[in-house]
Length: 163
Length: 335
Image 1 (cartoon, rainbow over the protein chains, first blue to last red):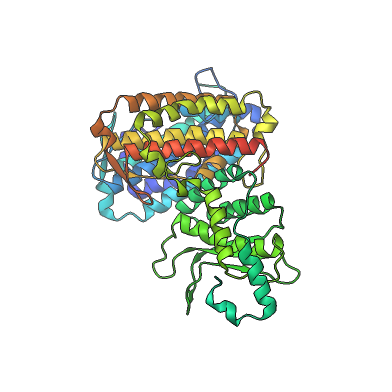
Image 2: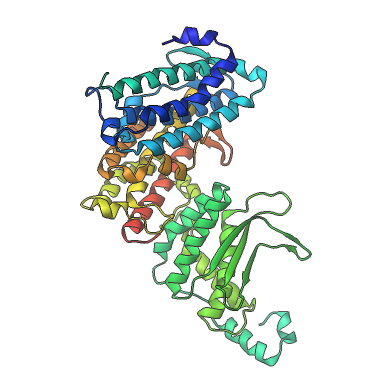
């Protein structure tokens, strides 16, 4: 799997194209799987496939908020995130995976629409991330691509019972 | 003393006019039961979204017609007021044979297309409801704008918004009213909410907690989940305001979108309450550690304008009140 640095070297069009495929790839991966399989954690600390889909849905909303912050002011401080807390609080395991995927697909379409409309200078605007430091919109796109790859991989493993 | 047009009316019409003028009040036996609907309408109108405003208006009007024991009306909320030679049209009540009477309301001004002030909108709504009351409750053959008519409209208005008569008095406090409440009292309100909420939902079955009082009105469980997620969201704004100078305060979803996306109806209410309670403790810990300067820090909200930490706490207290009432109603099967 490519690292963040590898992904960063890809042309922007390639990264945007990656974003357009993710919902379909998720759909293909979970198709025909029982709720039991989708809800099975490979071990007590690692997410089930269903939790991965819910995580992608909720982080997509967060990414949009970050774009909004960076576009709305100069170098905002971007807060950290605790994905395990979300999984627990928002009760991911009780979700219907297809509804979660549909919600992710809709959010992703909205993200792509926003990114598609950005003027070229906007890509250099930045926020200050708690752990990653200065982070441009360009960097954020790279992060989302890598994040997609990472979690698609994790979802595949979870379905095979591997952490 | 009748209005000038009285003299131009026929004798039969004058009789109706006098009957109308003689009734100066419409009493609701339990006005407090409608207060949450009023709060919900204020919130919906504030969101500037027509569909949400129409739904909230419908619920309030339905609540009124039910409380008065009169037939339902069809409700339509439209965007910009039409221009008319006599000025802007604010609302309209129409009756057609064989159809349910209809109330139409416009939520934006004709020229500036600005959303009308909440109390203005509510007044207009009660004005149109007043015509319906004339025909169905008072059984008048016509509905004239008499002094009695306007007094009846006012009597309903003050029963629905008691704070309008005595600002800061007991009853439904607006966000502005909460802003006047001393900070320790506001924090006490916030601290009390998880306990109040637990009292309402404890010992209820999942079926009771999941039952929506109307197809488009949240069940008690959905309100608990909403409070949990709103707590994260509003305290997130507070943290953003504390960490940045004059940041934008963004909304990434409507509350209804969250309810659907995050599938509130599938959640466990007890676990949702626990998470809300934990988040609330963290908010209080954050707020208790702030100095006076921090309370004055602000962010920018597209709709509400400049929001200080102080104002966000008032918003939170108002939001708690509103949704606690909503939980009680949902459990009683009322929207």
